Figure 1 (spheres, one colour):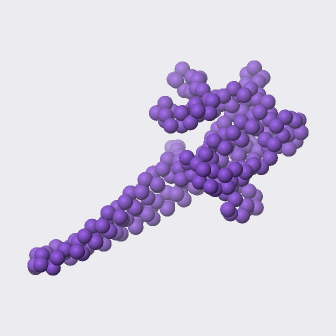
Figure 2 (figure 1 turned 60 degrees about the vertical axis):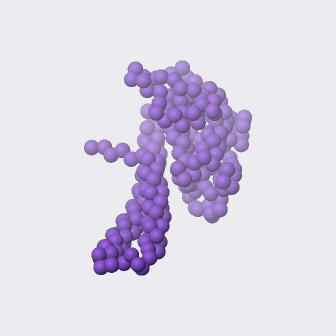
Figure 3 (figure 1 turned 180 degrees about the vertical axis):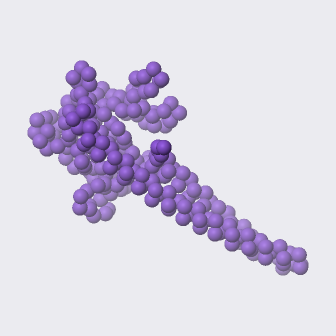
Length: 253
């Protein structure tokens, strides 16, 4: 049996839980405050009995909200572990298939000397996102573009944050060089800040450095109109590549 984990879907669900818990806690607090202001003249023996039951139920609800918050943290850790596993798996697969795949070279300083155009493409690059956060982009393991928030010290063995792009340089059946964009991932908490756009521009700069003819990758599903529109705004198109309707997203360079 295969278990498929999508870190982004886990994170989105975790965020939904967090929002639900926050709203529930706010509503519960409002109800408790309202309850405590009920005038004393309403009190009778039955009311006293119901009041104690209500307070017991309130404590139970508060405990459930705490459990939801704890589960939210668990899911965030689970998503992080899943992403790290997938990165490790993809990197290991790339190495093991080196002699049989159509990948033609890695991103390295030795290859950089063979390509004199756009030399800055392989260097570290910094940018500031729309929220004022400063980021460092660096090529890692020859297959990944990783990001690090520069508010924190750069760790030894730079691995970057949860934002990354994974790619490979290939040759097609006609011998043309292409760059295959396998993933470009930004967690929901960091989206809509221009981070993905900066990563994509960096990947395109790498592609131009190696004089590839196009960038391509698996297309988002038809139902994912937001991501499809994101690619279209950046000059990408879609093409059907299988009888079952499978698509690729691509851009000529």
